[in-house]
Image (cartoon, rainbow, N blue to C red; front, side, top):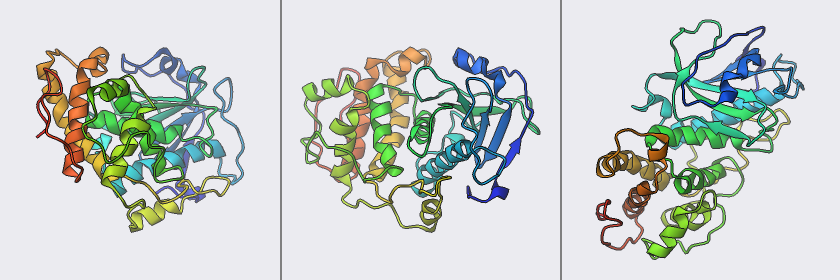
Length: 336
């Protein structure tokens, strides 16, 4: 468990080296040889530096030898991982069939000219550090070294993308980013964001409404994901377990809680959706004639009917009224 105790942290200094990474990784990862320090915290290895353009803020108020910013990134990542994979029992990417060879999640804190963070959907070889096998495989996240997790949920956001990648190959943005915006409320305040569609339906939405959603990204939170959560879950509070109480007690370096409240709606249906999508991507692969899950295929518009079908199936499983419908497209099957 991640705590504020100085003894809970492990850090190493003077680490330099070049590492061969998966071909799907962008150039910024190959250039990240300046990251000369690391912190191990739970399932995460966080690489950072105090010099150059990728330097993190050096403040270290608890005098642990690790900058507060790095510890705060670790706290948010661990809380997000444990909240969703342990408390709420979402599919754990580290035990998924896709990523079963990965031993941990590697995080690099780098200068980023564009965006705050990115999660990668392919395993890579681990960066050099003491005691690792040269062939060790890891999942990877890059977070901007400027990101302050006390005021920014980018680390948790990218962690949830890894959960999605472990569950399904689909990467259409209305699903990928819209659902992740819903997820952020597990860390941020409020049980749910805005609603721009009536949770009472009708479900499924009209073809015109679906077409608009398929063109969205983050805003799909309001037109699909939040309404689904509200339609299936009247209880706005997270389950009051001992594991949740431990997470709620974790504080950032300024004393503020990582979890801003203990409220969230819709976790059960969202978990069911991910499970459904794990089945439907096999069906899509066959019916759409894919030869592999290339980046283009993972985000193809042809996936949209299959993803929406999985959403409706899960919605019905959780008690919402979902009308019988004809085929969502020439490729998708009817809603059972």
